Image 1 (cartoon, helix red, strand yellow):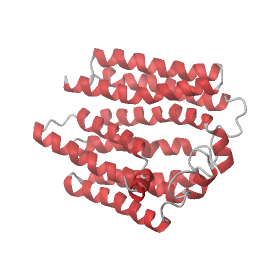
Image 2 (image 1 turned 180 degrees about the horizontal axis):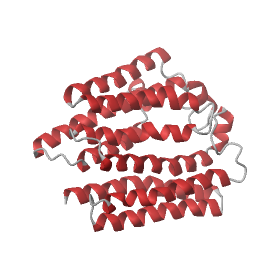
Image 3 (image 1 turned 135 degrees about the horizontal axis):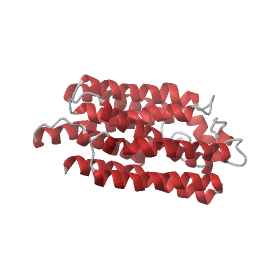
Image 4 (image 1 turned 120 degrees about the vertical axis):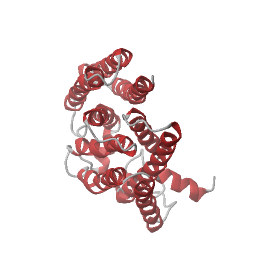
Length: 289
């Protein structure tokens, strides 16, 4: 791969784009609308392509805005902009073309609500969450909103209204992000301190605030994850699988609080990485069964 092409790819944060795509696919496949297989397949293709473009543009704009921060963090100092492998102006143009192009694509090939949710994701992430990271620890909670919006976009792509089940999906993704990112923030607390970002882990010497909040959100996620079965939109296999997965994540959070260590933070992070794809997979299997 040519160096410049690789730099543009890095600018999009492909792993995050992939995670966003997973939530979009789950939203499409769990929505109650039941078009023919061909229509559903095209809906899925358009939702994935359009949302991936918006996510790529959003991540690129975030890197443009935080290039000074990235330069001070060991984890991010090798990114294209701090290293000078991409011109800032070129990166900005690329980001806006991808982001705005994705919103336009969703509006043309799907519907206005899906496009509006994608646009809201971009705006709230880049212009609300990103600057808040320098000002308040509450930014992590705010950032979970744009992180959870794509699953609603996937749902809306089918033409189904955003009813109770759609919002349950939103809250599952929202709550999941908090123990996930709090564990990551603990592992990279020195980086965040060096970059002067207001993460909860910075200045939390014994880790009790960081993992206390992680445990609270993980325990709140347990009943929310069971809601689809309680409301009758998912069956017993989903209920049992969600119970096991959510109890596991809650336990990992409580263990990290009980004995704060980088090892337990890594265990919590690893559990969270497995949790969401596994839970959404169970939900999709249940809906398609």
